Image (tube, rainbow, N blue to C red; front, side):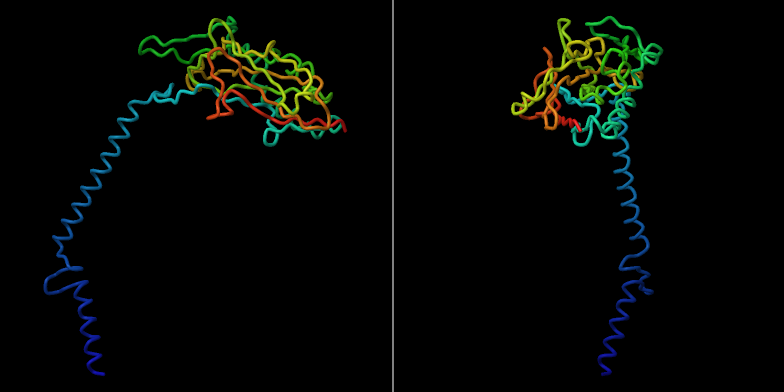
Amino acid sequence: MSGTKEEDRKGSSEWREFFWNPRTHEFMGRTASSWGMILLFYLVFYLFLGGMFVLTMYIMLLTLDDYKPTWQDRLTTPGMMIRPKGDQLEISFSVSETESWDGFITNLNAFLSPYNDSYQVQTNDNCSPDQYFIQEDSGEVRNNPKRSCQFNRTMLEECSGVSDRFYGYSSGQPCVLIKLNRVIGMLPGKDGQSPYVTCGAKREDSDKIGPLAYYPPNGTFNLMYYPYYGKKAQVNYTQPLVAVKFLNASLNTDINVECKINSNTLIDGGERDKFAGRVSFKLRIYDK
């Protein structure tokens, strides 16, 4: 029994001496100078790493441009989007139930408010159509802010919300707005030929979609709205739109619609990106 107590005292004494040895003045097996050298080494080591990180970030920031991406993946064809979006790119409503399409009208009104003619006249230029609006910098002198061309709401005619404030939803002839995603420096056409939008039903719904009307005429994204120079350089840029009006779509059935961009410079999206240059959505119109 006494032997066990002696061993416990001896073990306890060894632990105490490991943490602090009064004879050698060692803390956890090291003297103050030894601990000081270790702390100094790690201090210098981490200061060096921190300095390397700051220097690397500083050099990287020197290569960046505030107005144009220094490194940019070359997109062969930008994506497309519709308004109103609805739930999961599905536009479903009943002609006789106004509450089923009120949200679409609100969405379109909010989206088109920057396109009001009065606002466009104040902020943007009346450009020459069918040619690029090139605004090059002069050497190191930036030509900023860059000007933008007017896209007036009334150019959408029957889908502008001016002549028909319900955008055709109250009569079962809905309007859908299409926009092409912005890509800095993109030139989407050549030889004066603007890209244009075409829409159609998927093969199984080809007899349901009926005739379509496009606004502006022929569904074009005019060349004068390109190239895009970026949000910071071209603060008042107004993205061009194309409106598609469904004049006699079948009622009480699903219609799978696909709209795509047609251009003599943009490549059709292949198997790698099926949504490049196109957008698909579902349209369902109830008569009651």
